[in-house]
Length: 273
Length: 264
Image (cartoon, rainbow over all chains, first blue to last red):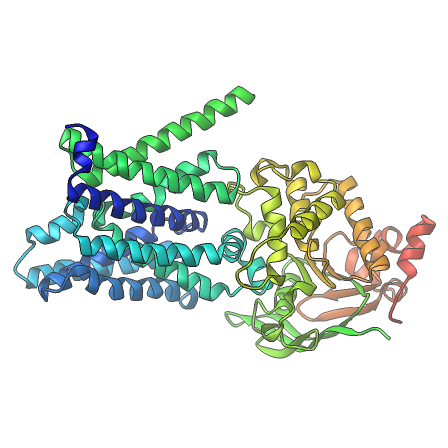
């Protein structure tokens, strides 16, 4: 089936539009998180999402509305554990992650075992995204990206050197809170695209791919956005052409982009030597 | 009469019940050039962080430009250079120009945007530190000394009134180090920029600083450099050869600079 014919289907249009917004959002936050060595916060929050989805399914409420407040509260919990309990970020993420999974399994068990719905959230299905979910993705993505653009210099400052940023009068606590809250919103939105299991890939891959080539912070953000966008679009069509799972296809395309960038960087470097 | 830029009053700081600083009191007057020295773990960097409000004292107070650090509105008056090892990620994708521009963030109002005059200021600062040719280079591609000059440029780009520098000459070759100290000296003498500089380089600081603040969890000595040299404490603090190295310079220029003490 030609690409144009695929594009005439509403469910594919919805998948591409929502995927485009969510992927750019993921890549932008991914750059900030990877540079601050918080790459796995996405993974940890995704595990919390698993628990919250189980609650949603148990009470027959759309999981996105249950997950958003729970995952946002958990992200603040990670931040507080790092600040107050003097626990390193990876350990704090591990604690919340374990609670999320354990809670999800217990709730699923209480509800009478795992069912198809919960499984679909684990691996995602962007092709089944509803028009309501598309609107939610667009609005939340635009809000988050706008706030990031308007706070660009402060965010760059805390990402590069938090101590200097504080000495410059940047409200680092507010920005850190903002970034983890945005990450939790993004993780909840991403579960429909690639699923809970692969959420962190959308945050990490575009960023590390961009870091292979980009020499400036601004270019790293732009390149990560371009890689994320291209991965989602190519991944969706690959899954359609070859009848593959869409989420996994998007992640594999991301991995291919990273490999190309990695090889390109080393070829370029050996060319200079 | 010189204005008091910073006042530290009976300052103490504990970390996990370990006393890091105890009962520290001193003033930083406009035009001072203070060498902050002491052995490793003596609390030098902690003192700088307390002065900036990055840490909250256990007891005592700090006033910066007449206000507690947390309430200080005019952050652009301060240039700060943290210890490089504490923050630096060599793989961070950023150009030299981008990093220097961070020094201008404090004076910008929301939404913070860099104007043409800011770009001009960045260029001027890069020129002053002889790194104009590195402006578009990625920070990770530079040598340790070049990177340190970039961070110094970030501290200076805002034309600060008070400079707080934590071991600025780490990883810098001797020639660049001397140039940097000359630059600081020029800013201090010609533009009346106040300098508080943490260093282990006592030989060099002796040439330029008007005052010495020697701490080892508490103040061991604070006063004019000449007073310190003549007190006989020099060899106790810096070893037997220090008297000659730090105080008895043969270079007349250095002697002139050394014996200057603006606020006495």
